[in-house]
Amino acid sequence: EAGVTQFPSHSVIEKGQTVTLRCDPISGHDNLYWYRRVMGKEIKFLLHFVKESKQDESGMPNNRFLAERTGGTYSTLKVQPAELEDSGVYFCASSQDALVDTQYFGPGTRLTVL
Amino acid sequence: EDQVTQSPEALRLQEGESSSLNCSYTVSGLRGLFWYRQDPGKGPEFLFTLYSAGEEKEKERLKATLTKKESFLHITAPKPEDSATYLCAVQKYGNKLVFGAGTILRVKS
Image (cartoon, rainbow over all chains, first blue to last red):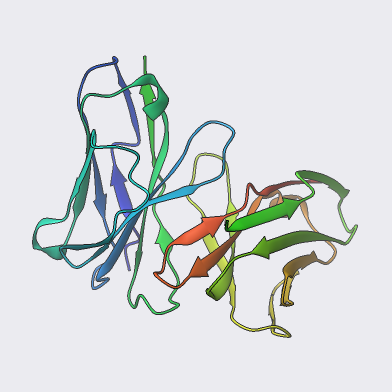
């Protein structure tokens, strides 16, 4: 069974540009989560989808971040316009059942904003 | 405020030298506590879930235990391949995970 996949693995962009990250969850997993780790800090929650609906977006830092999950399958996270402090590693995770179920993580996308 | 604290920040062991990692937490509405292993350049890899105080789980050289305020990850006779960052995370009602900063473990042969 394929795990959570993320694309791209690395992205280097200039401040002010736009970047879109993609996550493909494990097949059949209705729950999809985005997290990020900025330099020297712990991994922090961004948002949670149940199928195509946003269940919790309390961790989204500001309105420059837009997450979508059309059709309840893959998800995208767009940062527009990117700022220096957006640099970090963005992880996606998925789980089958939101009630105390294991979240399986992807390899992450390392974003560098210059 | 919810807080997850891991100690030590880093740990160096000789191969075969057993030790324990600590995860203490102050979280309201705890649903479960998770341990993950993370290798450089990779995402967190699931190890264990603990749901209630007194619960214990084992996998190879690793054993995780849970009390009302902390969890321990015991490593028995570690090998160099156990070197990684070990992450503790608590799941609250609402499902998001709150992570600690991790413990970097290095096992030398």
